[in-house]
Length: 98
Image (tube, rainbow, N blue to C red; front, side, top):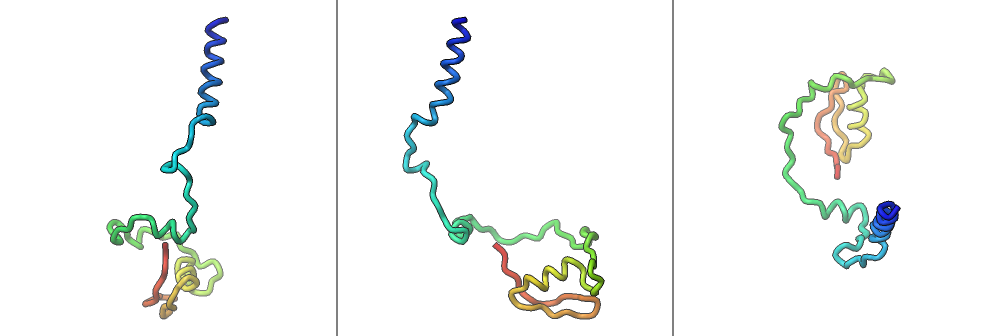
């Protein structure tokens, strides 16, 4: 009985502990806009090591217009439109990404 009571008090104390500790300024939550939060992330040079487009054979041309899903997304999201050649071959263009 005493062990059960002690365990109950210990569990209650542990459950209430976060409510009784003061939050220091260093641990206070900071609210940032998405842009500012992304800008605060460390940046590194882009690396394409290990990437091979031929490993991704799942691109479909669902609407049968000659452009597969990958190319349709590239066309839709281009900051500067690429050139679309025969067979929907895309060259040039620029894209922005966080």
